[in-house]
Image (cartoon, rainbow, N blue to C red; front, side, top):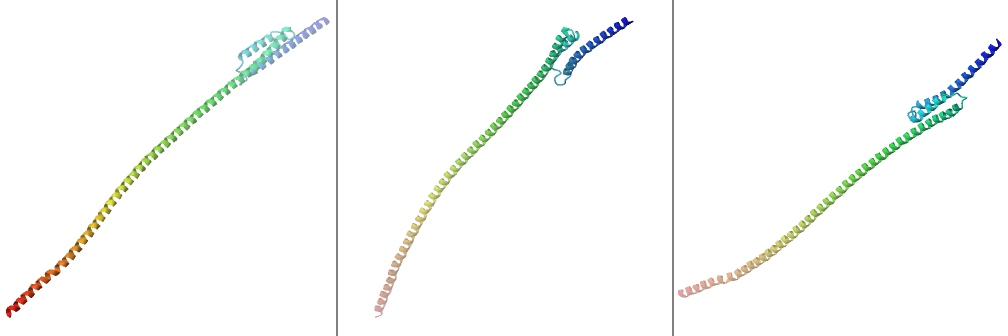
Length: 223
């Protein structure tokens, strides 16, 4: 009876020790699986480092094949923990790399847009400069044409002035000639009047003398 009790106690201790070992083994495996599951389910970095996550999962499965007191258990546990750490680090690195690539793309897009805006601004400035040059050329052509018209008007005014001067000179000559002719006519008329006045006195005396002679003859005959 006493011997049976001792055997039962030893068996209970062995079962308890085995349960404790199994619980310890499950705890390490569960901890690593939970850490790896948390990584794979992360919405930000869970899709990265798939190869590293697969290696970490294999290492955890190798840990589960050994008991905690076995020498291989500690070795594979260390490897599994490092594989999980590497998977996390690689996922974070790839996420940062993807974000950096996205930032580079956004930066390139910004530079491209800035270049496009610079090109558009340069095109607008060139178009504005072209329009200004065209306006300047048109204004220069207008001023040149206006200068030509002014020159022509000046030449025409000079010609008309010269013609008016010539007409005025001709009119002055005609007026002078008319004055001279009028003066000559007046002189001729005066001379004619003077001549007529001189000739008119002599004939008047001649008939009177004849009458006197006739009177004398009549007187003589009467006597």
